Image 1 (cartoon, one colour):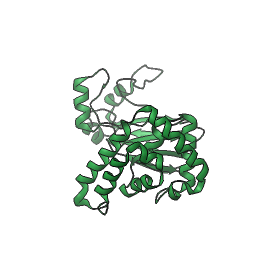
Image 2 (tube, rainbow, N blue to C red; image 1 turned 90 degrees about the horizontal axis):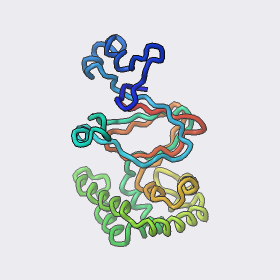
Image 3 (cartoon, rainbow, N blue to C red; image 1 turned 180 degrees about the vertical axis):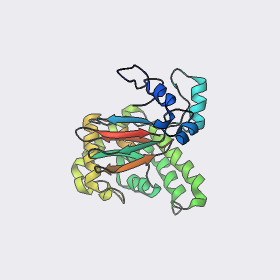
Image 4 (cartoon, rainbow, N blue to C red; image 1 turned 60 degrees about the horizontal axis):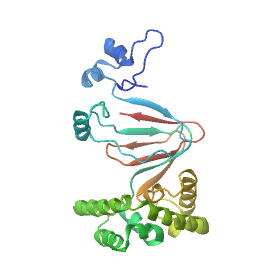
Length: 250
């Protein structure tokens, strides 16, 4: 529900769009909000039923959104960035932002198929670049460069190799169970991650997303909990229980 030009909400009785309604009565959003956002509703409200994992994606920041809109207004109908808040109405899980670098390194040491896809040279280069500097703010630029190189390498691996290593990954997940991936790591236990691998593979067999999971934070929300994603944050929503999860784009 919102005023996005691709599919604006309408009053069924009057046929007026939500944009027309809020522009005609500033009290609906308050004078302050109406003036700040040029009489436009500053968010898009969605209710999603996530029965299967949704695509891995990232929304552009404001400057990039403006460039994309100017270049291709048909496919990018507005020039806004889209930071996002997710509020769980049922139990919910998803992938959100890149994991701490030491966790990615842990998976490279404990998930052979993941390391194989990056290749020994790239894996060593990443681990060498970040070792002892994972949380050093003065090394933020070099750490980002190392992360970018490793993630780019994974995203460009041939699909046949992805399929081959996915079979090995699933076998490891099933055999190790709660001890999967060196007991999972600091943020998630082995059982959570082994179950996640099996579930994702059942939905999308031998997909690259299995391995992207080792780069991204795996987040589980209970009813009423929420998480915020700023523009550019890579994410994927995996499940929203039997019914719904709510998203609000600000």
